[in-house]
Image 1: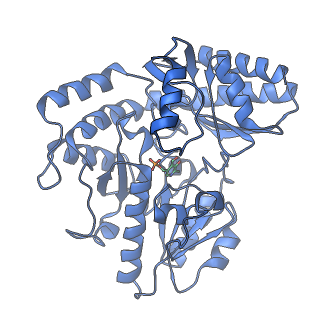
Image 2: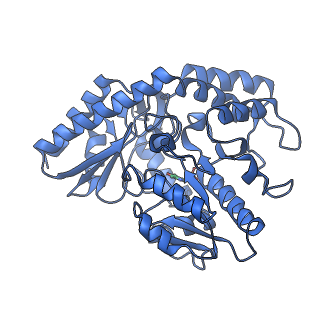
Length: 396
Ligand SMILES: Cc1ncc(COP(=O)(O)O)c(C=O)c1O
């Protein structure tokens, strides 16, 4: 089939929930993808921070293939060897001691929210259930996670929302402290706001948040669904800020495209759940765990992470050069290989013009272009992307 044929069938058969770019991708290899008409694209979206090792990485493909020949799914009625082994590997590389597996970022956040409510009740009283989140945050599309999300556009028409959430401005420790009362049980935030416009906090902000949580006996939940697994140049973004959360949620890049979500927490917090508290039919199934083990092993290697950091600096430098030439660029910001370019024009039309030149880019809000290339990106790929963006901006 062609792009056009699929687009026309999609409008007939799919519920219209996405503003999609007008292509259907059919094949991928490393940094490149091809559409149904055979057009090639340099991919700086990576499935929205998912395909960190690039498309169809041979080790991931081999792990999935060989596991698929042994056992695909059994349910959590039984112990799953690969799940236990992978949990131990994650624990070894994080602040945590215990892991729960699910299938997506929203589900990981739902589990974290349930943990926080149990924690509040077990360490206070039945009225201690409120979670403070941040304006401009994004935590998912389920009822609890749209309520947690600090953006009205995701909530519109879905009221009544889940009680027990309020939002305060990001990067403002005073506003956070002022919002805490006897009902508060947790603070939940992204260490770097991703969907909300790639917003990086000041260096001491997370330290202050940690200190406030300690003083008020609140759980600190970090949503690292987008920033985790090496995206920022450290395995987890919290490592940049010299703090440890009590709960961390992960998804996106865990399986390089195989759907996986995870909640990592401490021994003490994990005790708020007992058998029956929470579950997921597919969570931690053998196929997912086989993919995840390969990704963690590759991404957590120190030389790999150092390269992500160096390539992130190179990307930021090259984008800053563009900002000196084109005054539609108001700001370039980010950490590692998550970068945002704030424009004074509509970002989605710039992204579409880039696509027509063979470069895939995402947006984060109406005015921010978002760069989330697979972590295997090379400096030559970055140069090629910058050249294409320069051509597009030059024609504005
Ligand atoms: C920080 C953050 N949390 C949660 C989510 C939701 O993840 P999912 O779409 O896998 O449910 C996203 C997705 O973009 C995200 O960026």
